[in-house]
Length: 471
Ligand code: GTP
Ligand code: MG
Image (cartoon, rainbow, N blue to C red):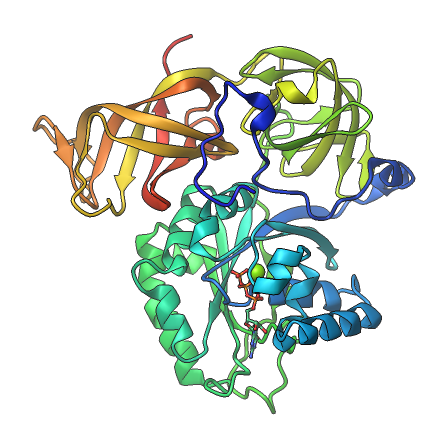
């Protein structure tokens, strides 16, 4: 079920399992009825919900859908009853996002939930990532599709602390989000209604002051790209409308919907060469692939390549959210129906790509890595093996040569020859994979050139592709 750090063997394409299951499940036929939706000219943003297990990501996501009118009272009542029957009374809001039985019984998101809502100015796709450490690979897939992140932090006594500790997922998610190209973060300090918090300004300030230096050290410009706000996801406070002064007298900032509305969309080039990493695929009157467009545009009738296997395909239909569209640009999450290829011949990690300027397919590249935290007693040297996650690719890799170490202070290469490095080091090295994968130089396409390395379920390094072999 895509729950562990599995490497999907390329030699057995039929066995690859999707890491992000499309939990919204809308039939393409229904979508066709809504072709007219194309006139919807609102801007579009992909938002991933990240943070430690039980921080309230699914609850907050569910509450957003409820407050924006996507879920009616009757459904909520049904969920309240179901949650009660499972002795998980307080989980009913999370049930909106957690649709699998396993998720509801355990009260933990496993697969990335996907939903849509709109504000005055923006169409949003919510990607509700799991917080539990076993499911970090699923979180990586979710974050790799996102433009911005909502980092959910629990203010409840003890919960902020566990999430923030070494080994807690608050830290890991932030570092991953940054590497995966999540440019901006809204940090929501959640559970402000909890009896141990009771909308305390001291608690909120404590969390903000502890998080700020950490966010800085993870590479976020806290003044420009990060915004904090207090909420109660469960009660819906400070979400669609600002929190009442009788509940929280000291908060003068925006509510969550206002903050989301004001976030600037990153610049994207609709005229760039087409690139859409494939996250999932299925059979439905042909072969349908899912993914987020990272560059360029796609229209019905286009001829494209599926890389790295260079299969030429034709675009039969393009679906964006629930509606069929003629064309779609960068940033959109799409389902594209293709002719000219069988579903079995596609794997997640493949890239739908322009024919004129196809994405490079390589088995080796040069990268700059930042080592985060190696397993105990491990040293990072030539021969080190790890699992590489880059856009939707999951592949075993080996470090074949360390080229030079970078001084983290001056950002300049150090003269001394480097044979091994330790935690915290920045190092340029050659990375090899067994099967061809599609990557770009970070400087050309940041989203397709940043990656993470994991071993035994832990993220040990983040990196960017600095050079590709000349084709
Ligand atoms: P994972 O998907 O397992 O990572 O968890 P999550 O972050 O999605 O958390 P979830 O929404 O499932 O909520 C976990 C628990 O926290 C549930 O019991 C919720 O009712 C509770 N909770 C979430 N938000 C709030 C809140 O604003 N206030 C209070 N008091 N409890 C909350
Ligand atoms: Mg959840």
